[in-house]
Image 1 (spheres, helix red, strand yellow):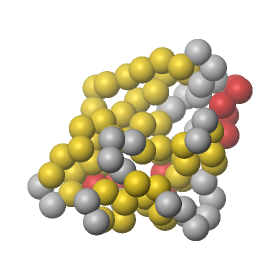
Image 2 (image 1 turned 60 degrees about the vertical axis):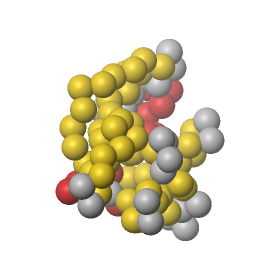
Image 3 (image 1 turned 90 degrees about the horizontal axis):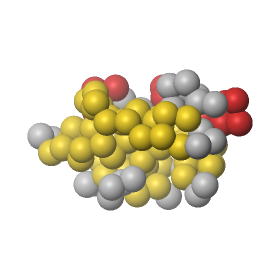
Image 4 (image 1 turned 135 degrees about the vertical axis):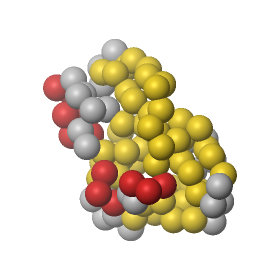
Amino acid sequence: MPVATWNGHEIARSDDTVVVEGNHYFPADSVDPALLEDSTTHSNCPWKGVASYKTLVIDGKRNVDAVWYYPEPKSAAAEIKDRYAFWKGVTVG
């Protein structure tokens, strides 16, 4: 079962991830919302759409924009709607 961790803390665990371009997208309800802080950062993918970001906050440490998601993905990426992916030192294994 895929598990996402950062600085020794579990962020997400689910046997229902979707892998796209080598990234595990975890269901939003597998992540504790108390660990997430909203961000104003956005990026654009030609086939997935506009990505939004969140910052991880754990034990007073912040990992800025380490979480991304597609609130309204394009139809080609509909399977990742309401799912989070991770980077910037977050380990998925």
